[in-house]
Amino acid sequence: MYKRNFFSKISFGVDWLLVFFIVPLTLAGLITMKSFSPTEGAGDFFSKQIIWLLISFAVFFVFSFIDFRFLKRTDVLVFLFLFFSGILLLLFIVGHISNGAKSWFSLGFFSFQPVDMMKLVLVLILAKYFFRRHVEIRNIKHIFISGFYALVPFILVFLQPDFGSAMIIFFIWFGMALISGISKRHLLLIVVTGTVIFSLLWVFAFAPYQKDRIKNFLNPAFSVHGSGYNTIQATIAVGSGEIIGKGLGFGTQSRLNFLPEYQTDFIFAAFAEEWGFIGTLLIFLLFGLVIWRILQSASFGLSNFETLFAIGLAIFFMSHILINVGMNLGILPVAGIPLPFMSYGGSHLLTEFMGLGILMSMRRYSRSAHRDDIKNEFLGM
Image 1 (tube, rainbow, N blue to C red):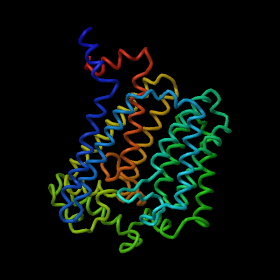
Image 2 (image 1 turned 30 degrees about the horizontal axis):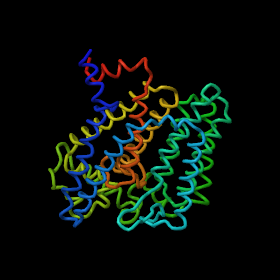
Image 3 (image 1 turned 180 degrees about the vertical axis):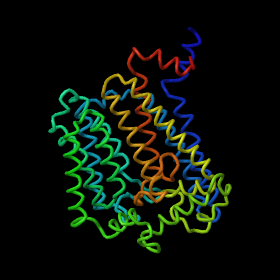
Image 4 (image 1 turned 45 degrees about the horizontal axis):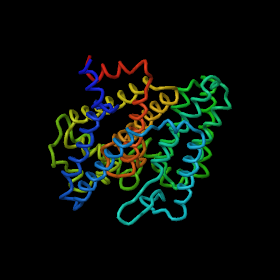
């Protein structure tokens, strides 16, 4: 009994297995940045990423101790939704253009991308909405009302234009709507509606470079020296790693500047070139274990709100992972989506660890019926 109480106190409600699986992913990103920094003249990527990781882990542990049950309040969530929607609007006035998208606030010594926080707020507000209406969720009006919460940031982000983040926002809504109990008939209606909307966007809204990205999805050789260049170089880098990789610091695609944005969008390709098929399998395993731990926490939710938040957070991570890896393998359009825990940048790291910190807080006041299960799991009993 004493041993069990001792371990439950030192755990502080934190899922240390989750932390254990995240740490090697962050190290993989750091090692990849470090191995190419000398030739790129960009040693700051490595050192700055360490700082962002330290800040993010600190935020994670601080959030773990905060009682976030106040997030169930409608007024709080509506305020957060309106606040970050306003921030996204403000980008059109004072935003900084990077890679053709007005998605960043440049504050001199660092830049901030608010859409990452908006994704987390969307998970929270959808968890609240579906939690309150889970009994009558098969009523189609709730699909459209919940869709409105996603449509507002979707449009604001799409017009920047940030097609990748708009895709993530759609996947978060679509995934959470599915697990909330949507009917197959309504699902078909949404698919048809989405197809019509996409057709209209193609004709009236898509910029030429966005159309090129979709054409590259169907045929990466569409513009080898233009918009398809990144995809071709990323697939070459991944394939050249073969089984065991070229070795640390010997990734020629990145070292010779053939692979662009190796520290952000294409860090998976840079890692795969050096560590090969075996290294990428390990990365996939670690990501799978992270998602497993998040879904494990979902089963301990105090109510459906906590459970839906955990599932929404899992969708958030899975969307980023699938899109980033897909564009690195040349099977999805290049969408400018970072790889969780590995890609360089502070905005996405802070958001990821904030979301996980909120999840750990929810774990601390999990269902009493499951508390012994959590303790036994930590002790390996």
